[in-house]
Length: 169
Image 1: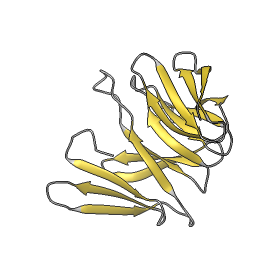
Image 2: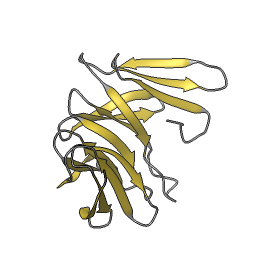
Image 3: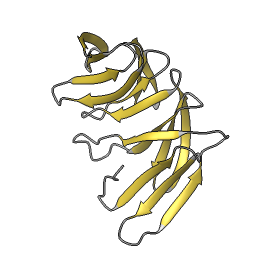
Image 4: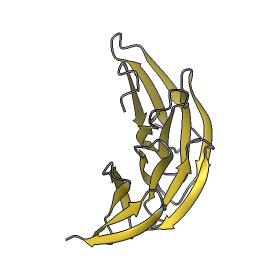
């Protein structure tokens, strides 16, 4: 994930349990452990400021084996909190208005919404079986692929509820 300054790259070591911050110009790298092992951080995203220059930005990463989302400060780069979510979080994505992180809880068949300002779970909603990846349409909706259900679910981000399901094959 590219940092908000455009000069920093954040990465996860899904099989190592490590997180990295890389200065693109110099290659200087800071690596931190996110234990306990086994740990599987992946699918990183940074919350948007969405027009609020005072909004604190964090890096969020799902931890597949621990069913948590890690919250990392960008500078200094460190883990500040782990938030329990549904079983085996896969997609961890910042919605465009900067309010929530939407987490696809792969084995719980749910979507967890993390309130960015409170760094706490706001709401958990049922989704199709096997939710994986989230994308946003910049019109207030999220679309999540559900690989077991062979569907994509549409979530209204103002209501925080699934409003439609599209079968796929």
